[in-house]
Length: 312
Ligand code: AMP
Ligand code: MG
Image (tube, rainbow, N blue to C red; front, side, top):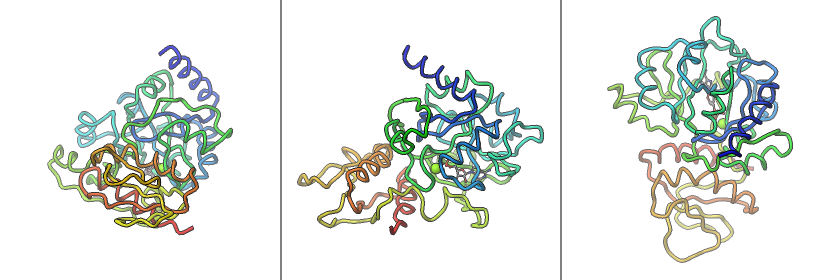
């Protein structure tokens, strides 16, 4: 506990100097910097090698702070009360007098905002007098990191500090919902759209943004472990790493189980962690067993499909 407090203070000192750090969240680790500072935000884009036209998600600890930067509405309040803090990102209209750096939004008039649930990150946000721009802590187009060790491996000594908050509990990115007009889901994620539908009494569609707008969360190739990945495989090749939903059959050293009994939440939590582990073990390719397209399984399949577009 004492250690956590001194780490949070260390994180604040670095952030106050307009530098980047990595923060733990319940979805995946984030690469965070002061969202009001052009200099700080520039460093995120550089470290991640992220195209400048791909806007960042900004993290807040409370509604009062959000209202300084964004216009809110009834749909937002309903979802916020039920599901934030948690794995849901809202697209809202920016206020004219908002202090958010223009680099965060690539001069767009909308902002992606989230309220993370992880205790350490909530405490950190409470100490700061600015929100944190924080996309996932990985080089663009690669798999997100779900533990501090993976973040350190990804960025080496280019990252000044990683606030270690253990393994991310959800293990997949947030669901993104646009609330600037008729509500639309823009990216599947940790919160199932059916739960939002129930709350809003609607049947929200997944709306992929037109390609001219270029949003990598929706690019065909994304979330890639950097080696070929095959889907719906029932017979893996001899030298392939094989990802299975649950423990079964004879032990084979190339088999990786994503859960004990096929629980999809466990599968989600273990997916990116296992993909990075397999890559480190120098396997040349990955085969994945068929995963039920239900509940969080839809998000898992969305990520796996994009990862499968890698062909070297
Ligand atoms: P990540 O890099 O995982 O944090 O992903 C952030 C996602 O949010 C990216 O796919 C962005 O394109 C998307 N995003 C950020 N800001 C906006 C916005 N104003 N409108 C639509 N999507 C956004
Ligand atoms: Mg990302």
